[in-house]
Image: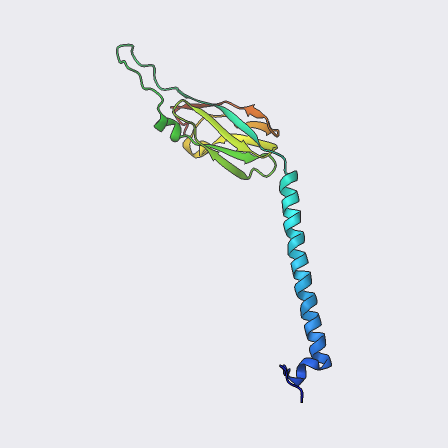
Length: 162
């Protein structure tokens, strides 16, 4: 008499269809894991090979062209942090004119933004509808370098109406 543990398997486990199914499933899982490993490796390599960012920095100067104030009307209006916040700058790609980033000057009118290497345009957001006079400034960012682009805005000009 034999004594021991016997495991009973259903008959379909040993059939030809079952062997094909389990082999196919094993192959599918194996390929899926290999695919994920490949994508992770490609992504990691791409992040290593990505060019380091550069920086845009500059100064925003707001010039008011209102009527000349008499000297006894002191103090004259000063540009404050709130004034700078009213004139956010926008960074566009040179080719597609696609919006890349927004920059707001600090209380001293200075701004700084990290950007990937490439060709851009610095402009004042809403320049045309607000009737502001400012020249869009093209510039190029290079890896690990800072490019300086200053922006001047003329405000207080009367709009010419037909």
